[in-house]
Amino acid sequence: MERPVLVTGATGNTGRHVVAGLLAEGVPVRALVRRSDHGLPAGVEAVDGDIADPAAVARAAAGTRAAYLVWPLMTADGIGPVAAALARGAGRVVLLSAANAGSGDPGERGSAGEVEDAVRGSGASWTFLRVTGLAANALQWAAQVRTGTVRAPYGRARRSLVHERDVAAVAVRALLDGGHGGRAYLTTGPEAVSQREQVRILGEAVGVATRWEEQPRDEAAAELTAVFGGPGCAGAALTYWESLTGRPEEVSPDVERVLGRPALAFGEWARDRADDFR
Image (cartoon, rainbow, N blue to C red; front, top):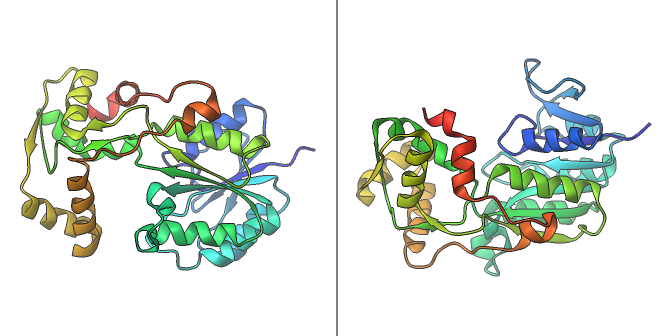
């Protein structure tokens, strides 16, 4: 009997597409879930448990051939035992990571770098998908798009956001195929698109005339502090977006190299998710 692939975050932005991609290839899937009403496709084996619980992860990983890891916490606290459990049970780990984890400056690697270090040190065969940002981040503007005006900071910031279907497609190849062990892929869209232009594209996708309204930094900082729970993360995010007004996020060829086709553009994501903005 073929061993399953374990998917964590199986109902999230990328995980649900990883599940669908594996099932499309006839691969059995096991998912670590925290609730019984998970809404996973028929045929997926669900194992109850929390990703931060090493014992639950060990149960879910036992007898699998590979694991897709989404670490949802803002810190790396507790990742060591979880990575070790995946290494013992699955042997191969594909981690959804962040672009800054590949920084040569230890101070810029953040918790994503610490999570990578734990997976790398676990003894598992690893692949890191270092995402600049998911296009799904634009869902934060959904309510404003419906009104026709998006008020946010740094409209000139250019981001190489990646379609979650591309992240999942690369993950499926890394989970199933050889040659991806020990690789870190910078996982981006095919171009860097300004936030102002993203809003225009979203409006076209849903048939609403939309415009960007530049929000002062201090006003945005107050709102983001409430979202992030503190001024530190809010300030870091704003400073990063400000930097992208002069130097856009990097565009990487890694998605095309792995999949043999160009990465999906932001406009395609907007059309795919148009109903979320209506």
